[in-house]
Amino acid sequence: MNELLPLLTYCTLMSGTPGPNNMMLVASGAHHGYRRTLPAILGINSGGAVQTFACCLGLGALFNAWPAAHAALKLAGTAYMLVLAWKLAGSPAAQDRPPERVGFVEAALFQMVNPKTWIKSVTVASVFMPAGLGVVQGALLVSVLGAVVGFPCISMWALFGVWISRFLSNATRRCAFNAIMAASLAVLALLLLR
Image 1: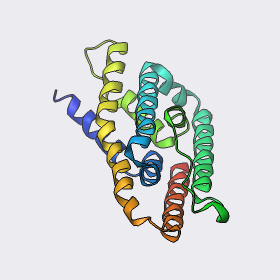
Image 2: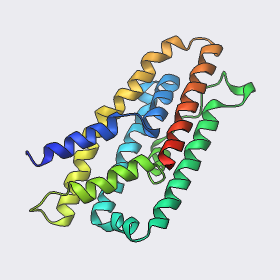
Image 3: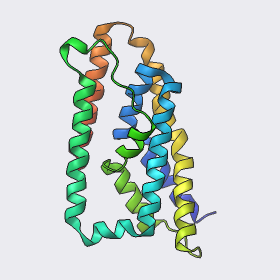
Image 4: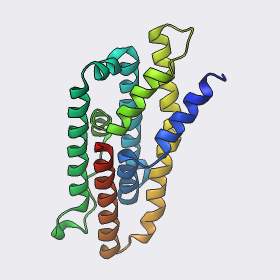
């Protein structure tokens, strides 16, 4: 169990700190409520677990062998996050409507271009694989533990969005909130590009 404590701490920090997933969940929680945001939460967790599992089985080594692939992924992820920020900010005529809800599949697929999720997955694969287990068993263990730890961490961000929604009762506040969330997502995208 002591071997797993650093992994659990790392997963808590990576899942609980601001990032593209959590900004998306705050906005979704504020506009759609927790229950309608739950598919996105499950998609983020599932996509991240599959990605971690694949990295533990050797996908992470590909990025070490081909740094250009990692750079291309960073660019694709940044571009996608900037598109999400643009959609969240909305056009002037549509700012009083909530942004589209992100579903399970979209959230799971988003992990493939989310630089923070790649950093987490590759780090788990290269640093936290347990000794004494086979590769598949170790990969399954760290992937499941990451998802179990991640669920409450990212749920808190969606619940924060639900809580803040009571302050978004008029169009001006909703526009300001959407602009702040969009700007936060854009800044995160550009910071992850470094």
